Image (cartoon, rainbow, N blue to C red; front, side):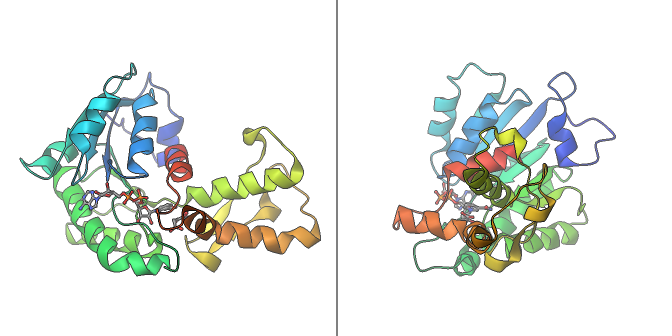
Length: 257
Ligand SMILES: NC(=O)C1=CN([C@@H]2O[C@H](COP(=O)(O)OP(=O)(O)OC[C@H]3O[C@@H](n4cnc5c(N)ncnc54)[C@H](O)[C@@H]3O)[C@@H](O)[C@H]2O)C=CC1
Ligand SMILES: O=C([O-])CC(=O)C(=O)O
């Protein structure tokens, strides 16, 4: 369980297994992001119990993961038989990658109609069954699904701004990766680039000037670099050619977050 005095999710993640036994939920666990994210959670020494919730296939994903010899006890839940209640009750952390992904020609906003309702209903479950949990929303459009999650938590009287997150770490991961392809640095721990703003096109603002350690981006490469970070999602959607959007890099980024 989360101990008293933890102020942020990063603080939580930097703690060792000696001080924390996390009960985590992945909601949307059978999907393109959900499966690799669940694998990373299953492998984490911080996670003691892992609940996989989805509208399909979680018993199979859970059975598969349960053969891995890591600490976490893993269970799969479907909506039937009070699945959401059983999956969410007692959770410290709820990761939400549930919802449809983009196809070429779509913007993230085109996902709003369907994903807003999915996130709303899952966060209602959070409010009811694990109101103190940290909630990490991955489902797009993040710029809109997070405010929806906030309103649901406020309406239930359990909103805590320090516990609700929109996951935009993929923009940080992309920034660091693309910068390293310019600088030639091979150690991922040696490039830290803050990214502020939202998670869509120009709302994504990579602060290369604040890199630690400082990086020198050649003037003639800067615009293309900024554009690649801001539209990195489109690059993957195009390459996947109708089979969805970023999943593996997103799972990595979600876990790192
Ligand atoms: N924040 C970010 O940086 C990123 C966000 N995304 C977003 O993540 C979302 C998921 O993407 P993928 O995993 O590729 O999609 P996917 O279609 O492969 O998986 C989505 C999963 O959600 C499940 N689901 C649907 N309704 C549900 C409900 N009511 N309760 C529980 N589970 C439900 C589906 O059954 C499916 O297993 C998309 O909205 C996508 O745009 C994707 C990449 C990066
Ligand atoms: O572009 C998308 O639809 C998925 C996403 O958010 C990303 O890859 O950054």
